[in-house]
Image (cartoon, rainbow over all chains, first blue to last red; front, side):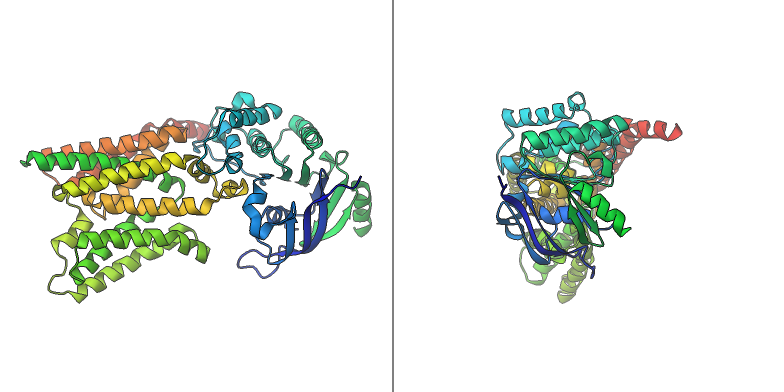
Length: 241
Length: 276
């Protein structure tokens, strides 16, 4: 059965303020429901820009982008309520006055809505996400005093606590210890399957998810140069090199 | 010790308590959102407004508050339109306010730096009226109510505006609200220590609380308490030593901050870490 498209990019180009050269240019692709897509490419190839254009944090200056049929440029906030986003290398200094649980809970704020207080159910969802990542014992520790790997798990838990329909993960394994690097990709794959999430993972670590994903997008100089199954994509890349 | 009438002292005490709560509360957001320039920008906006009042024969204190509140209201939208951090805009508004103040004062050379205009800069706690106290009580209740109702959003924005936005929170109105509230609080608290010293009231209590506490909920309670304590101690010191109230409050507040930095467990751990 053909799944329905969830994310659709048509001729998308995004330029950072003050720059002339687009960070991504003429990007076209469609991602269907429950797809797990892997985005790879060298530094400054436009991977992070792509994710932030999809969730509307950056506005495309050309082209149209729709998520669940909604134009991201005009319905960004509504779309973002359904997207769990883990930014690249988000680290918090030791003096930040927030506990790990606070950070995870914040992931639900957009869904809870203005003037509404988090309820018992919201707390349960946040704790559930922390349990999934096996970080419930650090829930009440200050975020800034956690290790880089623990902070990264907190950020993943934050994205999952939201109960999103789409997951956008930007280098989510970069600060993890070797053991977690083995466990977390499988965990994300499991959550993706169980909750039927549409998932896009940006990473340098090609091999961490290779067996788990069915599609790989390769970017270079802001363009999509390969959009294939991982096996074919790697062969094409080898030919190119 | 200067003899003060009981009524003046009562108003001075109430002023210290209310301004301590207000600046202590808003200081937490100003410090966390890195809006350092808002303190002096607003106080000089009030100064320019007072000068405008003198030039146009209106009540300088009313024009001071209107002028500063208008600037506070505009800073957020202007920074978004210009795509610059609000702190950059407030830094640019600061000398603009001073320039406008001097222009307005030049327009009325016979009046010049009247005591009413000067009181905006130096402060005059003795001149606090019952109306001022009513305004401060109203502002205090309004500010606490607003923070209570939108705490969730403010909490997320002080952590990371970008992440809050990524989670679907519309951050813009809340950032504008904080800038506006900070501006209004500064303007209404200016009589206590004056525009030149208000900066300390805004930053010192919040920065002192941050030295000891790891939890924003505790900081938002501790900062106003520190603000009230330092204001009352400063007032007491001023009465006993016969020194200006504003200066005494700032001296006490700075001493509290210095002690907090010295005794801070966070800093001690950091230094231990550095040694290792």
